[in-house]
Structures are given as structure tokens and as C-alpha cells.
Image 1 (tube, rainbow, N blue to C red):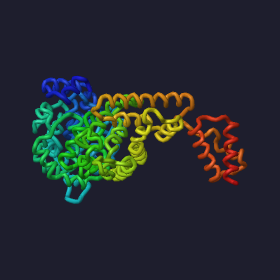
Image 2: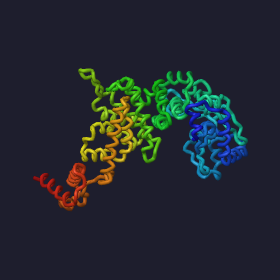
Image 3: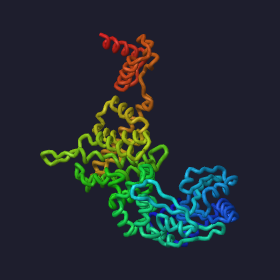
Image 4: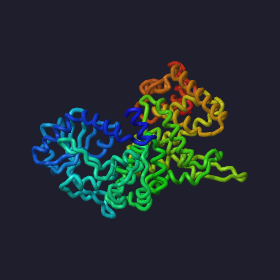
Length: 489
């Protein structure tokens, strides 16, 4: 996305003529694919149009390689028309009228004109096919996604004023928002996601409908909610989307730990509440993502920042002198985070990574002014494992004090810790720290076969390695024999 396009979509009104010029440029890039596809469907007596996100993104100058089409053709006809033309075809969306394919660099989905609706208890839409583009566009989520380009000929269709809403950076539904959100409650979360992704705002009637219908999000599958949440968190401005979720009450159903933070005061009274502190930590974490090998957006770092203090409401205590404490909120928060992420069907690896960061986010505060021994530094690295870079980010981002002198001291102290880690890593290969004797050597020295005793010896030598650093073979062998003798005495 160009700097000019990002400035328009995030901070300034969109210039319509400029948007149209960008769309023409993107259409020229797509022309070899969309023209051929349009001609194939027209020759078969079928209608087809480029619709939704690709049309919107072409005008914003942020078009990716994913193209969505709507057609009068039924799925079996679509499949027949693209076979032999596409490089690959798949039909996992057939039940919803969608056939997917790949043509060169383009990923394509072609969906039969349709309407979807949910009943009060269903998690799956009832699909019925339509016969015209106008009927398909009216059932789309927002006017900015209800624009189309008919093929062949590239005829622009905008029956609901999507281009004006795009210019004003407004999210409005083609019809009544209550009808739209009844058809698919996930659209309420998409409103928050587009707010975070594109810098748009929702209209008053959309916000009111989201607030009134928030509970209806509970009929949506956890997987679909999770996917929207990930997109929101990884957007350029997740704070805006999260604020909308909280203010409309949607967060109470999809991420209740977040609005719960608004009830808790920070123990140092540095912020309005822990909720505001959390959003600031998230923003500061995003600003530090360039420290990661792959850069950003990084969901694991961002979600850990969002969840790092969720244990505070459950651990709040008031001392006699009025001081508020949140002892062990790191451990409690890790357990709460695991429960939420499992409910949202995140992978085990994602759950473990985020929870580990939440659990470790306070560890640095025991460092003081550098009093940790080399052993403590080794254990810090060992416990963080492959998450060390992300833990550096979370720990730095967690400093939100307005006291500049204190903030600078904390920064210098963490700089020192990272320098110590770098020196020890160079000397001792901390990233792959292990005992100075392996399992085969332990069995040979002690005359043991494989079994629990070997594991116990291995763990002893690992602790010794963490305490003392690298040892020679002879010193490690002597220590192992002494341990075995004491164990068997």
C-alpha cells in the first residue's frame, strides 16, 4: 500500500477522482484475468462481476492477489467453465455456492448470487441462490463492499453509494443494519475489523444495531470469531477496533477479559485504569515489532500485550494503607488467557506461546538495578526459549509510566540485561543450552540403561549448567558421580 494511500485511508478523506484513477490502474493489472473470465462466462450466457473487497481495495490502492466474483452461474456450471483455464480448482465452499481456483498469481473465488440468513440458534447460514447482481449486492455487509465491476466491459455498479462512503471513510449497511446483522452476526465484528484496518468509523445506526444485537454474536462459531479477531489485532490500528467492540458490548461475548479491565485501577495510579494501560502497552508493542526477525504484524506479541494484565481483576487486594496490589496476576492471567484462547479454538502452539509470555511478563522486575547473577540471566533465557525476542518487546512495552526519569531508568536497565544476554549467548550458546553431558554419556559413566534415573541425572546437570555455566568433561563427570553417590547413600 502506498504512503499516499495509507494517509488517505487512515487520516484524511479519500479523494474520489484519485481513487477512481487508482482503480483503473489496478484494473489494468487484473485485466488479463478478469477479461478472460468475463468472456468465458458471457459465452456461456452467464453474468459475472468483480465484487466486494477487491473493488474497494483497488480504489484504496491496497489490492492484494485475492479476487472475489459473483455470478449467475450455479457452482457446477462455474466449475465446468474454469476447468482447463485455471491452474488449480477447489470446491470446499460448494455448499455455500463458492468455487475457488488459482490462475497465475491470482487466488480467485467465484460465488453464485445468493442470500444468507441465520435462525435464532443456527451457526451455519441457510443459502439460497439469486438471479441478479442487485439482489446479491444488497445482502453484502457494508456499502463500501457492495460495489461491483461487471464483466466483460468493466461496468462499474454502485447502487448504495459505496464510493461516497469510501470517500468519507464511513461504514454503512446497504439496507437496515438490523437486517444485515440478523443475516450474519459476524458482520458486527467485521465492522470493528474494518475500523482497525482502514481507519473508518461506523454510522450511528450501525453502532446502535451492534449494541442492541451484541448477544447474537454467540451463535457464530468460535473459529469464525477467532479469525476476525486475529485480523483486527493484526490491523494497523487495533485500538480503534477494540474500543468499538468494548463500547458496543460485543467484547463482553468474544473477549470478556478486556472490558473487565476497565473496572480496575492501576496500582500506581498512573492511568485511568488497567484497561487504558493495556491498550497503551499494545500500541507500544506494535511500535517495537521491527525488533523481531520477521517484523510485524505479529499476532503472538500483540495478543500477549492485550492479555498480559487480565489476571488483575481476580487478584486485586487492598492493603490497610490503601495500596492496591495484584500479586500473582501473571500466573492467574496466563491461566485465564489459556482458557479464552482454547475456547476460541487457537492452535496449541499459539496458546502456549501467548500464555508463556503472559506468565513471564513480570520476571524482569526482579532484575532490580542489575543484581541478577549469571545463573539468573541464563534461566531467564532458558524459560523464554524461542519467545525471547517477543518477551523483550512485551517487557519494554509494559513500561507506560509518565515519569520520564523512571522510564529512562527502566529502559537503560533492560538495555543492560539484553547486553548481558548477548555476551553470555556468545560465550555459552544460551539459545540451545543443555547439560555438559548427554544421555549416552550419563548412562556410560553411571553404568545405567535407559530409564528415569538417567532423566533425573540429566536434569541435575542442566541445573548445574544454569548455575555455573559450561563445565569441562572431567568436572561434569566428577559432579555426576558425586550426585549419584549422594543419591544412593
